[in-house]
Image (cartoon, rainbow, N blue to C red; front, side):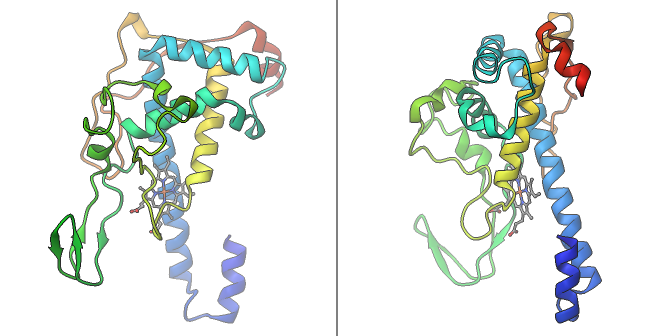
Length: 231
Ligand code: HEM
């Protein structure tokens, strides 16, 4: 990407300045790392507190991928329960719970309210994803709600929508799928002293993080020893 930017800089130096290129790289790094980290940590925490879901994910990976190799990007579309776990995590803990602030450039009406141009609009995705009028048991972690297209038509926008929607969505879903898939495939996971993982949110930043970092006990799964040794 940087190479492309430098090529463009030769043609349009006033647009593609060093500052602009540096700014773009910085925003990609910050937008692409903290978000994925936060949602992977939430997903692991949810799984530790819901061992039946973890067991089901283990079984699915064993059935679809086996134990002779690591889960790969090509496997992800077949790991439908893993996808449900990721979607349910993004519903409960959308990494950017208020999206990014938007500003109306023209007068408009939203839900009968007149919004003058230049107004900052903040979308509370966190509240939308937990709306009891839309979701059954909205506070419960139930990946099954996404199975067999059951949640089709239900409004979920962890990556925003429209022209300024997150451009990293596909990369994020693939990365979370691979990391989560490999962690489930390679290890047995257990709570520390049988105490449930603390799900308190830190809450004061743009990205929703855990107040208490994720801690768990893990042990390599015997059938995966060979794969782990080759890493
Ligand atoms: C779980 C992971 C991620 C989540 C939940 C997430 C969520 C979001 C959200 C909600 C927005 C604002 C959309 C809006 O206001 O309508 C956004 C914007 C953005 N995201 Fe992501 N994101 C994730 C991962 C990534 C990754 C991996 C990248 C790139 C490598 C990335 C790059 C960006 C950029 C550049 C923007 C600004 C887009 C613009 O303003 O036009 N994000 N993301």
